[in-house]
Length: 334
Length: 104
Image (cartoon, rainbow over all chains, first blue to last red; front, side, top):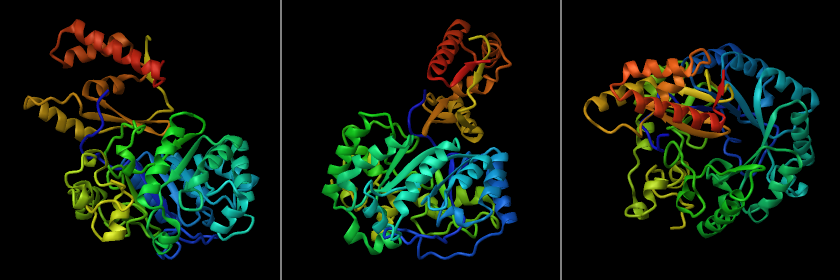
């Protein structure tokens, strides 16, 4: 078995795909609520699926916006699954009733993630600015499971939930959720505007991750994922990632509703348009992607013994707060 | 295992360009044992196989016997046949234990 790092892949492994920025919710931390972009028609979306299949990109994950806002989601997903892509999505769960869960299963969804920010209903509803959303999100998990779809749960860690993340894991267990993503807080969109109210300070992030890693290493059900490069130096972190540092621009890319490609959903820099430009030229030639893949240690990162593992932490957070990919991740406690 | 076959639950991709780069590096005398040519994703975790591992993986189609795979590789690699056979058998046994290969 070969070891972690390798050269640039021929294409990303995952495309996180925002089909629409429209959403039936208005969450306090949303990175995309104030984004706007023209939406493509079904035919153009299928053209994109053809490109992704030709490039042998194995995974697409629909996010948003709320993916189920688009009525052609089922048709798009079924087409993608027919082309051999592994299709998943993240949803707030509001529109996932028994009927839609069956339709998602029939369309070939491999897994569906539901966003639940707290095991306390009132807190979740308040954060999501949508009364009744907790009950419907939990019901969505059950509808999906009964339809035979693997379920995951996503919680953005913030000041409202970081002390009670164990309750979120208990909730996941009660509903047979296979994987829980404890997402790191991103300073993008409303997350940037509300960061002083919602974001933890570096010391709190360290304490949270130390505790969460201990929990992760003591249980398999549900599997717990963090996807935050800033934790690479912590004891208990024994992942052997394909790439060091942020995976965006190396293992994954993001598609906006009009076909524009950005490195990830949290970095609003367009590196090309998948319908109008050659994908290989974008992937191999984009200056932005090259800079992200070849960061230089700046500030406190220079000389830090952990830099070789974390590569400066989350590139999106560094860029959002300083305008420079190579600046240290503001969550870093070192 | 008579006819090793890739578990269809494993998502994988052959990195042909990377393989060409590694072969070129090998010809220059560089150590390429850590370079990956096949990427596998299983239960949310990503793995990579090195050049020989990738060559074996690509041949595990459930049609070829283990003996055939060894013979094909013996024709490609200028190494001791016994050593190669042991490497292939160990590799296949490891992947079978992981559940990535099944008997076709």
